[in-house]
Image (cartoon, rainbow, N blue to C red; front, side, top):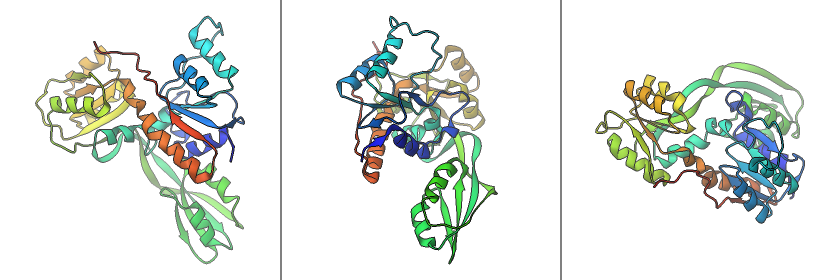
Length: 333
């Protein structure tokens, strides 16, 4: 079955709703046409000119990226600028671009869970929790309660069934999709109300305990191995301290280090740590490993099979594959 770009976007946003994004992060639909039919999907960390050329060469019509391609406003479209030429190439070849940034970072089972998996963390939970999932109760009168329960119950949506009704507990972030599905199923009256209990915690990163006992210095070496990087920066006054708790935030997570201090984290892992921020980390007694921003290339290894699974599940006629290019601008010499 051929699908439009928006069909894939809708399914993804059930997994990582746009409401999870932070502040004014320009995540989501970036460029192209939502209604355009798509056949070939390229998954990438970054949308750079060389990635766009790869997409053109491979006849891609949808690029799924982590980093937004339109991160900064465009004030002029002078094609002498390589960035602007890249936009022109995307439009000329009818390539739609979507980016899942901080919504994917905060999503359950998303970017920071993937990084925690790579670090083999145990007892993983959200780090720097700022809010909790809001829940709603949906009461549905229906002649076919078994049908509704089977069709709508998921790991996050619970159901209590009786002879002629089903009461669902639904995360508010997923209500729009839930209601669109419900409208297609046999039902009579529908009642919706907020409930006092809250759902899962929402945080930018993940924290947990190491699988093996290591010192800060040993764990820094393990981080390099886990993410396949040739070098990492270590910020610490206590390299021989035993690591009993770890927090990880993919990308530029220096701003969140006070949460690691408050929660007595032994080792904080994030990228793009600034010089003066590193001084502040040391002053607060925090050890930090900076393996770089590019560890978020995990999107290629983890999102690609997820999209492939959905394609098979829903009968979509899609060829989904990861970019073969390394977009890390840094080299260790």
